[in-house]
Amino acid sequence: AKACNVDWVILDHLHMALSALGDEHTNDERKLIDYFVSKLRTLVEETGIGLILVSHLRRSTEGDKGFEDGKQVTLSSLRGSQSIAQLSDLVISMSRDLKAENNIAKISILKNRFSGETGSACSLHYDLQTGCLSEVKAEVLDDF
Image (cartoon, rainbow, N blue to C red):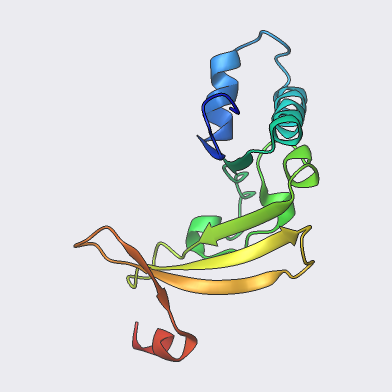
């Protein structure tokens, strides 16, 4: 990373990278996640790069409101292992109610080792024509 002047790495997504490892280390997904995330954390500390790691959410239990229906995302919503949250400096969630037709996504800070501030950060509108996300002010949300 240093030799190539890399400042940031985006790994989208964790579970796809794990499937590429196969059964090399273990066939236990939680242990594999623990191992892989620990290696990523070591890479970040040794090189000083920033790492954005995309992770999927666990499936909701039957009868439970799903994330695609607007269920609130928490640290325990991360799929596979709590090491994802434990070894991260910052955990950000992006969620939206797929049944709502307003194309609004809510951004929340679930963990913040830098300042400790967590909670709702902002709302973003996805423009189908341009493919761009733009911040929506709270007072404008009622119009969507």
